[in-house]
Length: 237
Image 1 (cartoon, helix red, strand yellow):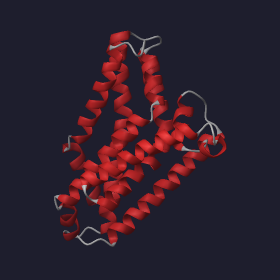
Image 2: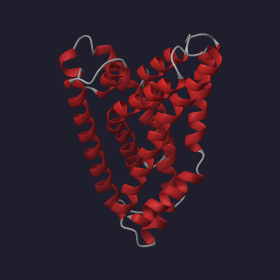
Image 3: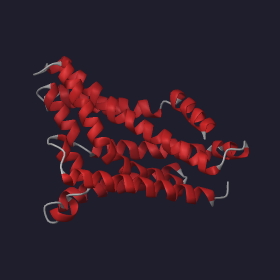
Image 4: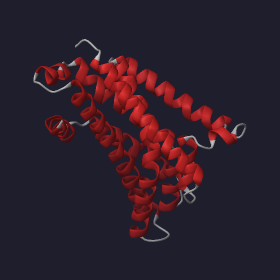
């Protein structure tokens, strides 16, 4: 496992797909800043924190690119033939993927807010802004992990980049849109959804609903991780 983690760390440090995705997100946010959609760095941060669709879609695409590429180019088969267990291979790739998603969740708002601060100014201080970004990151990361693990499972199941990306993106859109749409009609059920709690926690305090949602998200992460291992252990390479 240690050897696989080193291999995945090396791949992460040399891959550019994540940084391209982050660059596109920052560029799109820059357009909204330039057009005056946000009037300060603080309002930019508030808008980014509540918009769960953007990082969810970005990580759905990132999963399809990062995971399926190693299946198609034979790298996964090479890992197994070199003596690494299948469980170690697929687990290390999951850790790599979730680490990349965490980097995206931290870097994207940080760079965007700094750009907004330079263009529109700030109402508090840079230190306060960075603290707010870090708090938001820590609070929302557990909620995102379960959702991201679903995209990882899709990539392991499908193995084809185009198919995995299409399914993941479609699922992400349906999940976010329908959850928000039906929240008013079924608040007692959907209040525990990570999609809802990402929005709630961005502007409020920690609640029981948030803690339940975190538990559900982590359970989903474990289930998807186990399912990915079981599927990969029974696949022909």
